[in-house]
Length: 305
Length: 90
Image (cartoon, rainbow over the protein chains, first blue to last red):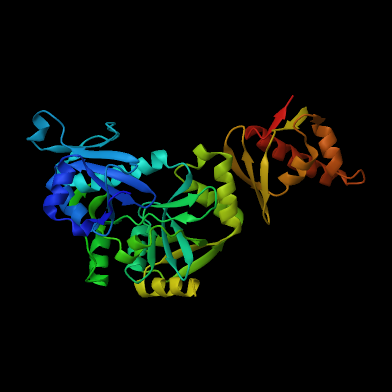
């Protein structure tokens, strides 16, 4: 039986030690990551944002060994850069060292998208209330993460901000309550909406603009082993100064929109087709345009009533 | 033109559209539900001619102007299915 603990019970010194040496082993939904890095920003952000996650040991089965480290040579010192490695493979170009934590988050997404094909993976947030999971597939810039954060900070259970994991065997939603990636104006919006929200450091000048990560609620992390049941697809689009509109989407259109938002539908073949078939036939789908926070929150409350 | 349809197609029928998954190419297509009637006449291993297909859908007593429109409609659908590799011509 392996020793189990919650990260918040570890001191910063212990976290530093594990990150700097063998690696900090975290249970994150259905995956186990071993994270190695001697960057202080990684330790600081991991401690703050992943504080509710379970720490495992090296005796546990580890899915991904990930490392954030500086390249060798002059770039360690002059305009220092940082690399992400998964099992010694470096899939991305180096980034400025200030982007170490966002790079870790992107890298962890990459690990899941490249390997977790027992799930149909959708680029989507997932939230749940009253046992009803709402899947919010959307392209970048649609306001998906802001909406997801608003709902999560309003008492909804966060299943995922970045990707929906649909089990190809039982079609349930696997929770992956990782930090919510907020960009630009949405950082201020969420800070104002909930003064108690916990954010990681604010990182400027990334490829996606200014980024900060919102800590998932303790309740969402605690319930991560509980699977969700898909109830509805809502395709959100934030449009400034528009009133809230909801349009039902036909099943054939919903099918095509779902596969357009999938990371691995083309890899899964018939298995993916069967999963989307199940989802489309057991949910309803809507297109949602909104701008006002109160209106959109009221809409979601009504949806799961 | 002899026509056969691709083998092992999976088809989901909705109100006015169908979703077709072709395991041979891994592609998924959203098509007009009328295509389903074409598929119902075609087999993967037994060819029929385009004119046989047209005869099946167009009654003999059909006015010639309407007949021409229907022929062209069926031809367009077949051309689209050939382009998508859901139907093959021999």
